[in-house]
Amino acid sequence: MVGGTVEATRVGQNGHARGQAVADAATLEQDALEHVWIHSASWADVSDEYGLRIFDRGQGSTLWDVQGREYIDGLSGLWVVNAGHGRTEIGEAMAEQAGKLAYASSATFTTSPAVRLADRLAAITPGDLDRVYFCSGGSEAVETALKIAKQVQAMRGFPRRYKIIARRGSYHGMTMGAMSLTAMRNEAYFGPFMYGVSHVPHPNRYRSDFGVEGEQADIMAARYVEQEIENQGPETVAAVIGEPISTAAGVHVPSPIYWQMLREICDRHGVLLIADEVINGFGRSGKMFAIEHYGIVPDIMTMAKGLSSGYAPIAAAVVRQSVFDSFKEQKTVAMGHLLTFGGHPVAAAAALKNIEIFEQENLVEQSAEKGAYLMERLEELRAHPTVGDVRGLGLMCALDLVKSKETKAKFGKDSSFATRLNHLSLERGFISRVYDAMHFAPPLVITRDEIDRMVTITDEILTIVEGEFAADISA
Ligand code: PLP
Image: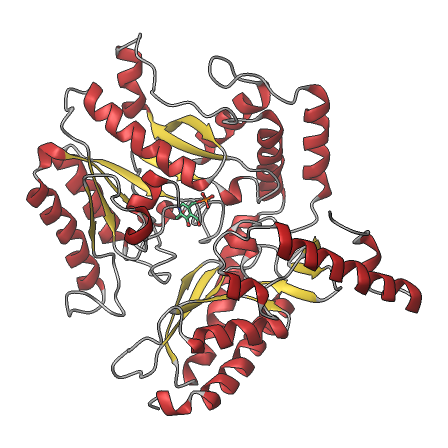
């Protein structure tokens, strides 16, 4: 049972109300510990004093938890709330749609908001990415893209093209197909994974797998993809998938040549190219879609998170006309896929209103401008002995944290160094995410003052942790 009202925890209460609020928050925390399975946190994570945060309210880039503590949401939830918290107009659009029509079968019909949204997406995605398969989350979008690639290859007369090439260090989701593409998958619990997946190096100029620097590292990474296609046998490869700007791998921004080479290599070998824009999309990188930085059109694009800025679970795999053509030519064949909530009208209404806000407030341009300022401020942190690199584009930036700038040795994603930074930043009211890299991806509405605050807190906590771990760090 969830006890009490959270409403009373708002700041500015009288003594009695505050006492009640603290009691209510404690009940909620106890209930959460007893009943909520927090997705990827261990029991130790949730039960320690930093683990559990129950959020109650948000506005712009600010969140408040049930105890009334205030935070800068430096990660937009999980790279989701691009338009910022507290957008009542999205809620109103959803309520209006729910009152009108909450659901119609996605198997054989569609609804007016889903049609309007598909039309908007066709307009804002590059090139002839014009056909939209709706789903509810990023993993489903990736799963859908995989299945489309395999079925289309078979329909084109290549049933043996089932292999998928993904990149090391990548994250594409946690359902079985998507997890098979994810590099940090847990073989011991969930293996064997989907057959026919291989992983190649991703573009990484800071720690190149090829011992070269700058654009050469990106060119080598692209060449490696072609070698992998040739090694596997081009007649067996269905698709190559990657995030235009890899997030989980540590926010590496490749030069345009990388994606241009991948486009050309895939075309030459009859392989479909999938751009996973689940995080990159909707203004995160300073363009509506990150692939626009590279001047190419993928065959399939996945999107989720920022599509509704998190106001409703909605996602999509958007494909080029040339991909959908197989279904027009083979008129009696349907895609072997069905998701009950795909294109949910209430979620589509949320996404439509979200995109309208993007346009009215020029959020994509705001991301580019504020991202440039954030990068300028983060550059100042290079003076720290543990800041090996500062990378990013738009409002997706990261500090690469190292034990030694010379060797670029990492602390490791589950190191006590990373844990301590996560705890200290939470304590100071700044939500970030520290693995090998520390991530900065606030809502696109963040203010310069809030950016300054994120950087000041980061500077402060790096200084503290560098003192505590001095023995492990070479200056
Ligand atoms: N693809 C990418 C690039 C992601 O970062 C994620 C999640 O973070 C996913 C797919 C999976 O999305 P979801 O968690 O909505 O299933």
